[in-house]
Length: 330
Ligand SMILES: *Cc1c(COP(=O)(O)O)cnc(C)c1O
Image 1 (cartoon, rainbow, N blue to C red):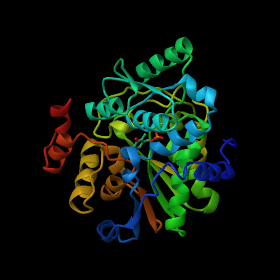
Image 2 (cartoon, rainbow, N blue to C red):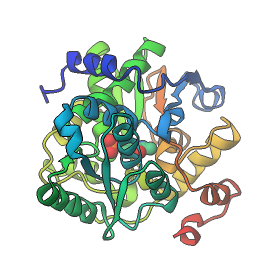
Image 3 (cartoon, rainbow, N blue to C red):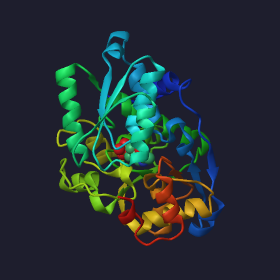
């Protein structure tokens, strides 16, 4: 854990500043009214490539030397890391190979192709995609930049935490989408570096909550991967997890799990009340508040709206209230 110090995070912020957008932070009158406490939202779904993943990918790419960039980079991804890495690689004269499972939505795959990356679709889980990425790193000499368990990726995602404290200096509670934990570990390290008393709560999906199961077990465990409206939150944390498991274990105050219908409610609220288009993972903070799943709210609360790369037909079905939108989508 000590590899990601507060200085590392500030260095990352300086490093990536010319390559990423400074996304808005706004208050939500609707959620503040609903919860009876002050709620602000970091609109990180406006980030270039549609998710926060550009922060970590850019930081990691900028930390490579010319020879390393010339080799090309490889990663397994649920979509958004692949898109961010493809964008960052192209911006820095490198080339990305992105391995994804068949669970990754087509709209995400096609955006990655559009960025000129070499795309490999393999297997039915993030683990299958990771195996292919490992093979390409070993056989073809590509440099692995994984989606979360890497110090430069975590430090990049952590810069989002610095933005939140700048926008809301007295922040007491932060709700962060949680899958592999790069975002939550980074944001928690950044915010607790400034406000040690702030509570950081990870939000995952009930269907496959690998980090929650691992924290409960006291070591990384494997969970089955199944389709979810929050597809960016699928996948395991890696049985050989080196950084994010220990950081999340130490820095997260709680982990909350959501059902599919709660996630759909979050997406609908974002659209109807906040006028924002979010993918499932981006809406879980809103969803957790609306579901009343955050106990003992200390205000003010900050939510991370982490991404918007949802298939628009699926979004349309969700906001029009279809009861099982995913069954028709996959
Ligand atoms: C990757 C991703 C997450 C989860 O981030 P982790 O670092 O894997 O925990 C949340 N939301 C979106 C939109 C993502 O792309």
